[in-house]
Length: 409
Image 1 (cartoon, helix red, strand yellow):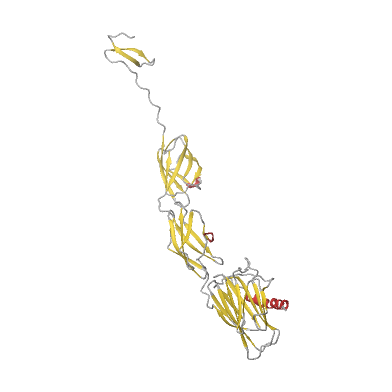
Image 2 (cartoon, rainbow, N blue to C red; image 1 turned 120 degrees about the horizontal axis):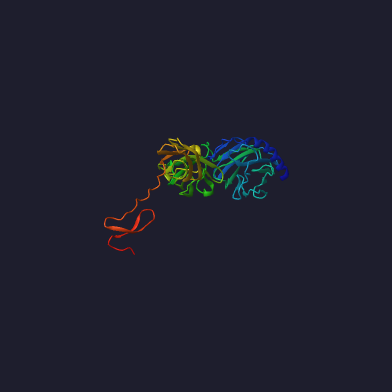
């Protein structure tokens, strides 16, 4: 009889499949709706449904309840990941005629606790997340008699899991919880914006069923994550959590996406990151170059001015007469090498060196000069009045003067 029941469950599963084509825009707020022979529920760790079985029903007739579970917002069958329920889930079946039995997700059959009934519960192998409950009536249910059966499902995830139920040979009487879905899982931040070179701390607020009370750091991401370090969480409740992290001084400004996931659903929000408030600048060594030469200079930056991707087209000298063969080398975030040739007829004086890195520009001043003439030799040294020279350097300069009255040694 159990095998025949499973075959009938598979036939009913075709009808349930029509109910399980969930919209991509489905939501995660706890909600539920019950109809005559079908219901749907979303979120909440415990679900309770009541089923009325009214006579007349003949002996060996049966009432079939199908329960199918899957991730909310799924847009195809055989969802990934597989919606298998955890070992903590329990299905408690009780009846107005007396009797109660707990079933695990592995199923089972009960022939003793319910008078004149066989109650069988089992997963349906060829449909992931689908479970079948069969109540087989071994004696007639008389006309005018109604049995009420309660099925409680406990240990479910708090949010993100959709359950759809279909009933044959009975009607749904009640459902808990019920309500209208309030929107998709979302998170919001306060305060903002976030500034590079600081430690950011703000409160994340959640709605739409995402649970922040047990979120692990591994389920929190910021993208892009360059410049982000020391991420930490605190003061966690189901609806809020405090998030903090350090931001390196020269982190690039722009929008970042924060994503938080609990065990079932995830939500994202975008927050702006502002640049560190510094004035970009550059300095150049040496700052004096000669005509008729090829000069090699070292440029360093301040104020988070990034030189690591600078190209020759982003470097200019103004005025640029007499300048050629400009090259950049040894690129690093805060320095680069710069070389160029200076013609012999280049105009003398100050030039303005400007570098534009795509985000900002910075300038320094250098001088174009002529080489200094070689030093003149000192004039010949002669002895003064009343002296005579005893030694000279051979080029007309005396190196030893003595009084005329003295003898040279």
